[in-house]
Image 1: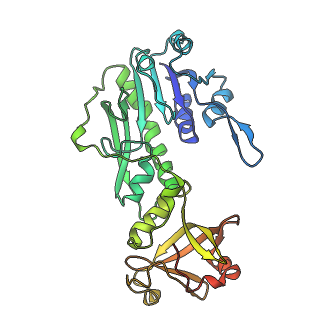
Image 2 (image 1 turned 60 degrees about the vertical axis):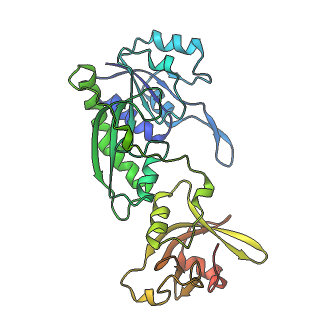
Amino acid sequence: MRVVFFGTPEFSADFLRALIADGDFDIVAVVTQQDELQGRKKELTPPPTKLVALEHNIPVLQPTKLKDSAFADALTALNADVFVVIAYGRIIPQAVLDIPPHGCVNVHPSLLPLLRGPSPIISAIANGDDVTGVTIMQLDADMDHGPILAQTSFAITPDETATSLTQKVVQHGAPLLTDTLKGYVDGSIIPIAQNHDDATLCHLLTREDGRIDWTQPAAIIDAKIRAYNPWPGTFTTWHRDGSDLVIKIISAKILVDSPLTSVIPSATRDLIGKVHVQSDQIIIGTGTTALEIIELQPAAGKRMPATAFIQGYRDIDGVTLG
């Protein structure tokens, strides 16, 4: 089966590797976004999918304009059976979707029609969902709207982070993709329309989305910390020495059935967001019970456990964070 693969980040690269490893697929080209300047040295860095393609001598296309007729002509000349699109990062015009005889197949990391949009993995954790999954679908002109070819589901654990859930998506989704492509192209898998009335949406996240609202319940804050790690990260501010010190919260723990819950036992107005330093622990009041901060990072500083942070910032004891 001749395949053109559209994708950009490491998440896409993992699926590309699975297709390459399966002898039934001939990846005739990889379409990815432009190389970008990254890191403190602003070095020009190719996308992960490009690196995988070059390792396997697969041609790489990095168009700046997807509606360019020259790009469409180049794709047509590849004579692919199907296009596979995974986290490419740009809207693909209908004229391009119509090129291959079997259209475009997409991998979406949710149980569509739930969590349509750009942040389904993060949103599933932040929402407190117990289950999520992977959907293999046909692409159409609307966002995550096309008919479903296959789905699989799996549990979200209480300590799940975006990183660990992404790994699950790849683990379950890569074999599902290879099997589904074969059944779809040979006609044994029939697309099924989504129930659009059940659709839910998630949005593109910004850094500001990571600001912690300490009036929320501890369970919601904890889920947000896990969901937003590593991007966009969660943070709070401490007004210290006449300026606001931004503190990134890396990990935390809800204090349930612990003697420490007596320190900040409930959601009273003067305890919400208030810090209590007890021995080597940082405890903060929330809209419900207390939250213990396990790892954090001050602005311009390094990630550190609470014990190390206390050594340098013991005056945080009794402060109310914003």
